Structure formats: C-alpha cells, structure tokens
Image 1 (cartoon, rainbow, N blue to C red):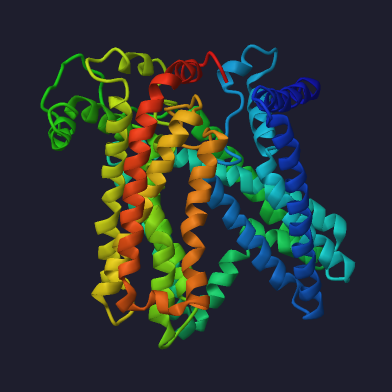
Image 2: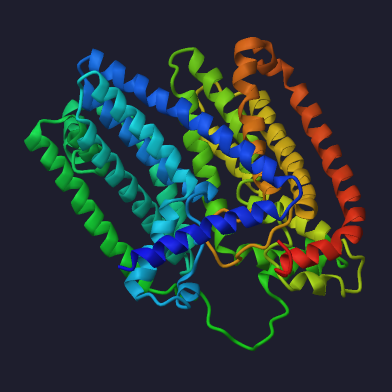
Length: 528
C-alpha cells in the first residue's frame, strides 16, 4: 500500500474542503466558528459517555451498559448516513483516482480511508471513547482494549453503512426494487416495536435474542472493553470476522455495476403515465410537469427517501409516544404524530425541492429557451414536489386510523392533516428560496450522500427540528392547545403557511431572472 500517496490524497481532500469554504465571502469565519462549536459539542458528548461509564461501574453492570451504548450508537450511525447523507460522500471516484499511480487495491483503500475520516464519524468516535474513558477511570474496563474496540467498531460501522447503501442503490435500480425496499423498511420500522409485548410474555425468546446479539460488533466491542481476557478475545474475534465479511461483501458490491431498469430505445412515446398525470396542471404547464415527474421518479435518491420517510415517521412516532401507558397513551402518541406529520410531506422531495436546478446541469440553460416565462420551470417543479409531498398525507392518515390507540377522534385526525399541510407548504416555500439563493451542483445518479448547500441543509434539518420541538413543549406547558376542541389553531397555521408559500413563489419567481446567470454558472460547474 502506498501510504505516502494515500496521505497526500487525504491532505488534498481537506484542502478542497477549505477551498470551497474560502471561495465564498465570510465563509472562513463561519468555517472556524463551526469547527469551534463542533469541538465544544464533541467535548460535551465525550462527557456524556464518561457519565454513562461512571454510572455503569457504580451499578456493577459495566458490560450491559456498554452493550446498550455501543448498540444504540451503532444503529444511529447507520440510520443517519442513509437518511441525511453525512459520512457517505465519495470525495474521489475510482475514475478520478486512476490518474494517480496507485493500484486498484490502493484506490479502494484510499476512497474508504478518506470516507471514514469524515468529521461525521468523529462524532461517534468521541462518544464511544467517552464511554471507554469512564469505564477505565473507575475500574470497569481496559483502556487500551477499549480503544482497540472503538476503532474496530467505527470501521465496521462505516463498512456496514456502505454495504447497506450500495445494496439499496442496486435494489432501487431494479424493476420493482422500490416496492421491495418499502416492504423491508416497514418490516424494520414496525416489527421491533410490535415484538416488545411478545418478548415480555416470552422471556425465553428474549434470552435467545440476546445470545444472537452477542455475535454482533457492538456486543463484541463491549466484551472486548469490559470482559476477562478470554471473553475479550472472543469479542475481538466477533468484530474481526464481521470486518472480514463486510469487506468481502463491499468488494463484491463495488465490482457489480447497477443494472438498468429499462432497455434504451429511440422510440418516442407521447401518451405515457407521466403525460397523463401532468394534465392535471393544465395544458400550459403539462409538458414541464411531465418532465419534472420523470426527473423525480427516475432519481434514486428521491425514490429511496420517499420510500423511507413514512416508515421512519411511524417508527419515531412509536418510539416517542409509546413510552406511556394507560390513559396517557393516546395523548402521547398524538403528540408524537403531530411532530412527524409536517415533515413526512417534505423529506422525500427535499433533495430536489431545495436544489431544483442543481441536478439539471446544462438543462437549466434549455429552460430559459422555452416559449414561456423563465420562472415557469421553477413554479411547475415546485408544484410537482407539492404533489408528491401531499400524497403522504392520506397514507399517514390511514396509518393513524389503523394503528392509533383508542379513542379515534376525527378532530385529532384533522389536526394531523392540517399540520401536514402546514409543513408541506412552509418547507417547500423555504425550498424555493434555497433553490435560488443556495444552489449547488449535485450528482443526479447518486443514491446517497449529502450534496446540498449550507442553505439546503439548514432548510432540511432545521425544518424537521422546527416541527419536531413544539408539540412536546405544548404538551408540557400548554396542554389545552392539544385538546380536540382546539383544533382550529392548526387550520390557522395551515392557512398562514399556504400564504407564505404563495408569497415565496411569486417573489422567488421574480428574483430568478436576476439570479439566473449566477445559477447557470453554479449548476454547470463553472463556479462553486
């Protein structure tokens, strides 16, 4: 392995990060401030892990708590990259690395070594190290064994996230793959929650499950950190075997190119399902609507996020609301659902909604040559995103009717739908502003990775947090606002958000003309 050249590629990766930051006015200050905040956040996280380690030793349950913490972080570090794209960006492709004098193995190692050095993985590394330090400081584990366990666990975590990402990428490129993925996600989202009551009534099943979990990387890391020498050796063996297996699967998937869903043909079809659906937008907008429908539905990232959004919301609702029992269960589940309904209408469309032209490349220039006003493509693209987002509301309402705890109140169902409408229009309004003032050239063919601009990330992540936080606060501080008879305030919220969307659509459409040269330079790659 050419260590010197790989180190040079790592150095180049961070030079590119710095160059992108430096190329915009004022971004140097933001870069430094962001990293200072990140250091503070990592310090707080490390102290949190340290506290968990101290508590574990004091209670005499070092290995059990280590299993829980390592397991929870392991799962979070898989879900977050797949949903948000952090830690999954391919900085250098295999094609680009062929310009360097390195072998195929060195190219593969360089790509993944640079990937695992992403700051995203450092957050989980600091959390896990905090736990190891806490265990070691109070005699609950070995520091050096724990350090080895954490490093191997992070590598296995990264490799598993890569394997799942590539597997989903290959699956959605196959005919019927999106439906299969939907089934898998629903299974993973609802089966664990539904199985908890069964495990309580069948302790032997729980014991068998724990025995099976002992052969997973988080439990192996816990055994290596806190166990006796023989047990620690067994834990090390578990992680090493996982690393070997994941490496073999990763290499096999990377060597297997994705298959096309359709056969290329030169035959022109005028009456496709896209064209029939596009007619609802009127004759003037139908051609553009058909184009945006194709643009969205043929995009792997759109299909993956769209399929994942509703099961993810159901899982979060169950996890947040299912902690209570008895009379308070219905209110708790309703509060959790009220936090999730607004953003299920946006997550699936978010990547395109906040960067409509970023994935179009040179097509943006063609939009300006159409026999329509320059902003027509922006408006129709936003209408199509609204259409896709609105389809989540009846699906979410149906799931609420089927699985919500009794009593089923129409007023509460109406509140959920109205808040869904509020999120639909408010977040897509913010997406219009991000499209014009925060564009970024993206990779249309990628299934994963976060190639949104800073503005786009603020809209997506901040928009989710904006709607997640208020309902639990209202439940604690102003419970009357969640009473069924006070459903009217959600109608007001929906009306206000619709007004914000209409204002944004009109204003941004007018601004597009003055911004189109700047947009064209960015989406065509001539300016960063």
